[in-house]
Length: 326
Ligand code: UFG
View 1 (spheres, rainbow, N blue to C red):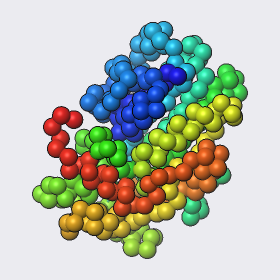
View 2 (view 1 turned 60 degrees about the horizontal axis):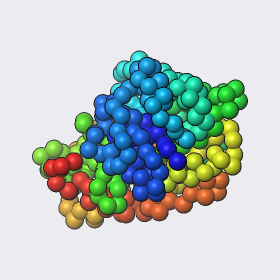
View 3 (view 1 turned 45 degrees about the horizontal axis):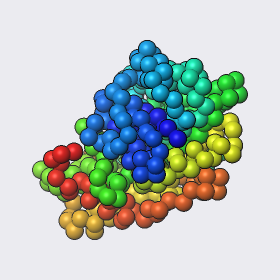
């Protein structure tokens, strides 16, 4: 089975490529390397190209046949999306439409889409399941929700089967420490905490101390990147049984505050981690925790990294590894 992985050089996509290759799939990565890295593509073949280049996409689909597409390519920073919405709508929505249309022309019928907890906006329940209203509060979340709607309509009109996987906070690294999170600039909490250990001069900022949470800092549901990738594999099988467009929330169902993450990282690294308080960051909801019961039952998905220490240990093993040769 030949899988096209768009965004396979990025953080989550590269873990997916490694897992697919390990499971015996034939894999082609398509990536513009704007934020991803060629060194992160462990196996299969890499085609450097952009989803906004329709002719390039036609060539890609003409040159080989794919059984399914997994789509990880996106601009994904909430704050940036507020400042530069045009880039987000063009890249995430127009780029995805180009991809879906190339799939239609080539007769490829199975699609796994990286959606996001950001499609829900401000939570109206302690845990967010699939029945929670989807009312994004930033352009990034809007772009992901728009694609979910496109997929619903494409299933009806064109028989394109899809699963949208709404990640909560992706975290951790490949258990072999061969891959990990590598953004520039890094905006995510866990890599910033670990980088502050490795380079104390860099410092660590906490955005907001006055949220309506037990310790005043934002609470998130951190889900291991490997568990996210497993859900993609399960989604491929699910589409064979259940045609149409489907959406599932992926998280561990347990929230950790920023201070709890720092304390857990102190235990994992054996180092005290100083930080400074900063004002709230625009677009951050106070609490985001998944109810992933539906994914567990319908996809037969069981996260292997249910514990935050394990997640941090894999991230720490990656970050402390010498960067040479990445
Ligand atoms: N934070 C800090 N200091 C940092 C980095 C982050 O205090 O150096 C805080 C943030 O303000 C937030 C929490 O830590 O309160 C988590 O922030 P991340 O940037 O790690 O993650 P987000 O929850 O903002 O974003 C993630 C994904 C997005 C997705 C979003 C869904 O990265 O792609 O969840 O809301 F859209």
